[in-house]
Amino acid sequence: MARFDPYENNGGTCVAVAGDGYCVVAADTRLSVGYSILSRDQSKISELADKCVLASSGFQGDIKALQKNLAAKELVYEHNHNKKMSCPAMAQLLSNTLYYKRFFPYYTFNVLGGLDSQGKGCVFTYDAVGSYERTGYSAQGTGAKLIMPVLDNQLKSPSPLLLPAQDAVTPLSESDAVDLVKDVFASATERDIYTGDKLEIVVINSSGIHRECIELRKD
Amino acid sequence: MMKLDMSALETQFGAPAAGEDGGLLFDVDGASMPAMEFPNCPDFDRFQATTKDMVKNKRGTTTLAFIFDKGVIVAADSRASMGGYISSQTVRKIIEINPYMLGTMAGGAADCQFWHRNLGTKCRLHELANKRRISVTGASKLLANILYSYRGMGLSIGTMIAGWDEKGPGLYYVDSEGARLKGNRFSVGSGSLYAYGILDEGYRFKMSVEEAGELARRAIYHATFRDGASGGCVSVYHVGPDGWKKLSGDDVGELHFQYYPVQKTPVEQEMTDASTA
Image (cartoon, rainbow over all chains, first blue to last red; front, side, top):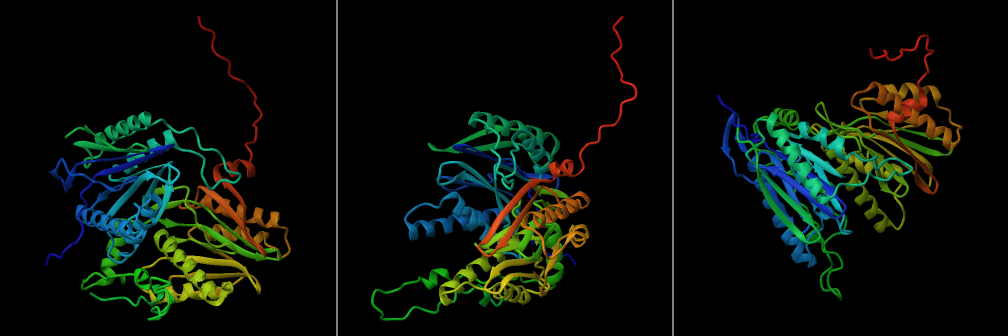
């Protein structure tokens, strides 16, 4: 007898890169089930607050539920505190939201990007049950293993755990970061069947949120 | 849907007294949290086992702590793996519960992060309610009781609570099976066997802080050398009567060449470039 499986992997990849004064969050728009493509135009990105953007890959049902859930909690926060949530605050909220479903997890692999209260770019990377860490860059999803080594090569900086603390390498400019993200997705599309079709890039900086879409290989 | 006993997550303040001047001091309703739900399925254990394999949550790996005459040394590596993939080399596995108590993370990263943060909250509430700091014994008991109530549900936590309280240095090992052990020397994680080898060999009760830190650093380094799931940076902390202080943070790749410098091999014959015709 067929057992009901509540989960499904719809594929896709998300990437975020933080710099001094900006943050780039990008995700492809392909939705797949097994070897079939169900949509070439399904967004994985959600703008949660004016300086905070979430990109999630994994099971679309859980992604939609999670993003809606967080948007609602953000609205409650705004009503209670009379200001929008900061990115680090949203990071903790996302971690708690994920962990409260520890025994029936959201099958989502998330990357949260935005600006912190000092205006510096921040990226938070998660596992499916809410363990999180602030980093300078991250990739999650089916293409993550192809993309992360390239980002490590270009962007890796001395660990924040080192003592005496070492300065991070001079970060990329915003346009260089966007170009890097485009290149990295083009490469992932070549070798990952679940990544492709279109790339949505969201850039957050002091002047606000700016979206861009570029085409990827559709095969 | 089955509901879990969430008394562990409730705040310690009761409902606000009605009719007092000024109204509410604490918004207790805002602080109440939803209970963690269980999936409605016939075989809970098989569901948990399948989900665990599917999502491959982050896990952490070699930590150690020991008591000596000048306090407690706590050390850990910084690698997190998701299945066979290294998801991070910069994970903070030594969690600062409060300025005089540290907790270590081994096992499931999300489980450790969440419950240590919860423990920190409870310790702070204890301070506010009792006007004095909580002891290491008390803090470890709080955590152990919570983990015991979740026993068998698939949490994976192997932690050490280290601190300095009125009785002096304190070290407890607490895990998700419900164990809580008081001791002088512990190492937890997949690389713990390698760390124990170095730690047990070099340990003496009377040591200087530098010597103790160096012992801990070498023990973690050797664990990262042999265990694939350990790596990144070694962080070493010392907990003394004035609280904890980070002693060092070193990349294990560099430590390797510090401990085993490259030997220059004597050159017998040097190759010279062939002259172009």
